Length: 144
Image 1 (cartoon, helix red, strand yellow):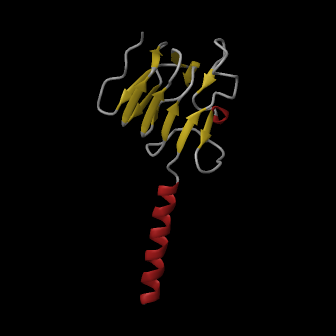
Image 2 (cartoon, rainbow, N blue to C red):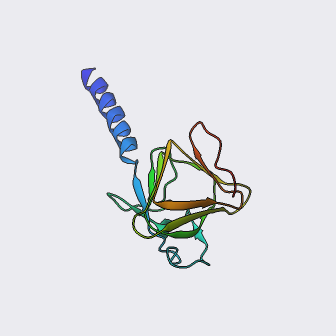
């Protein structure tokens, strides 16, 4: 009897630890179409080539997409296209040096990224074409 309870408890703990391990920090690379240098590129949020996961490699859907995931954008990005509505943990847009910009677009009908927190430092951020960035519990940033 005791072995059965211990086995069940161990299985539950391993399952819970596995879920915690899925939380990931991602850094925008924009590698799919040289998104950090090409003003005409269409750079999808949901394209895994555009993100570098910290700590491990993953496939498929290896981009910030769950409430456990953090996203950092630390370099220019043109036309970062939100291709689905998502809820992630935290979004940081932190750039230093010369003036930088991050331009968010929507691919369809007003896709939004909802976050617990959004931190913007040293960057000009544009949210256009019905895209939305939203800190949890607030209204989305309006289209500019």
